[in-house]
Image (cartoon, rainbow, N blue to C red; front, side, top):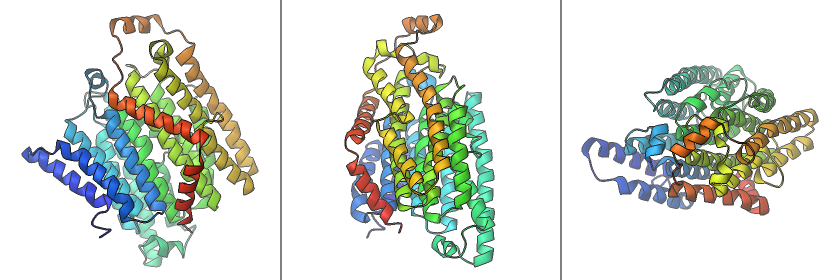
Length: 450
């Protein structure tokens, strides 16, 4: 019975129904939201509390947020991020959600590979949605080509492991090998999906060229799923530790000279993945829990920031275009500034809690030098976050931008995005004041791994 009402089955039925709607014109638009709510409602009833449940709930919540974020194509929004017919766009988002849920549920290497491929191919289509844009085409092609390389490494690693052990299950291989060449190749493939350095080369161009809603999707859902399965398979610890340090350092330094907001967020995401991987590499109960907390807070902050960016709608995607927002919309400006400060890890905001827990677990395990590097990189990263806040409140815009705003008045923030910004921003403030609920949920999820 649990398998029948699982969210994967519900989402599969929704996707197939929407595909039939595109073919035969059946009226199923109202069913999308209804079935999605049913899937979320049935999920806690179908499975007990565990690591998989926490990951899947985070994926479903993120997917619903992405649909709200880009689901109302106003004229101004369409001029920036043209999208396919609504139902087709929803189908692609739901397929990414379905593949992420399947990835979290996978128990053998073949099912992991199939879920990863379904996810990658769908994201390739979403990245190349702006068919009249050379940047979007480049983003889709680069993601496709490098994703194919990553898939090849994953398959080669699986073949080596199967040849040595005759096993395809994750648990069976984990009992035999921890540092085999096949395990190393699989770890590299998953690190690519997380855009961890030095396998991050695709992230800035894909973030910049893809539509903003797709960028928000790439920055959240796939990373939650890959992080979840990476913890379950038991990666090569030394490799993950090296990549974590490189990601934290390179993400902080690479964002310093960026002038476009989405490229800056790409390097910021690389740095955040470094902190999450640091917790995974340490490998203690506290560090794994800290990584899960970091991932939850990272998803919330990403959804809030991308929702505000879509609402502000800078035509050129330049950071300087955010100047003057504090005078035009003080509420949006305050929310964006506090989200950026939280992302920087400024106490007592929620982002500080996540970084502090990772560093605390590192200090407890004796990783003193790495923690010093992480703190130093966080200070460096704080420079460009503070620069963003300075741009929002204190920088006077260029004369061309001022005339552009006079001629093209900013449209009001869409209701769906307003609700989404309000919920995520409230969550950030709530976690700052009362983190006990999140700590308890992540504790229950992490303890199921042991």
